[in-house]
Image 1 (cartoon, rainbow, N blue to C red):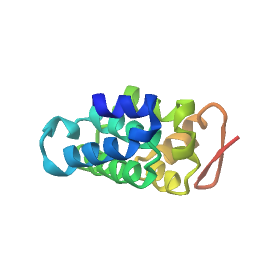
Image 2: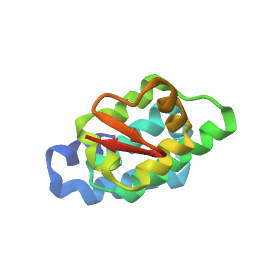
Image 3: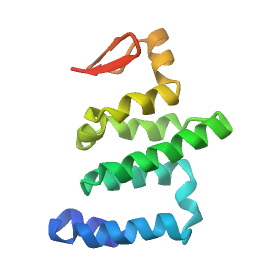
Image 4: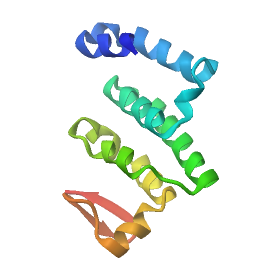
Length: 126
């Protein structure tokens, strides 16, 4: 994690940070990466390092965890609305991610997040 934060301070280290972060994910060295807070933190790190494909791979792990347990960590999901994750939210895959988590149905009932509008099955970022 130090390597990730060092890369945020020094972008030239991003490649090394991504290699290390991917190794943690695929090597199973840290099983705690499967918990809600760590999955969302990992997603954030990938976005901050410019690795949207990796972020969406992590997003799919979040969806699988939700489908397996039926539990969403609402507090952790608040991180998705940080300004630093705008690239993640603007990506077309974000629509499938929030739909797979059942958030479109939730927003249809309760209203969309602040700064957004709901048009059918799509969350529009204003």
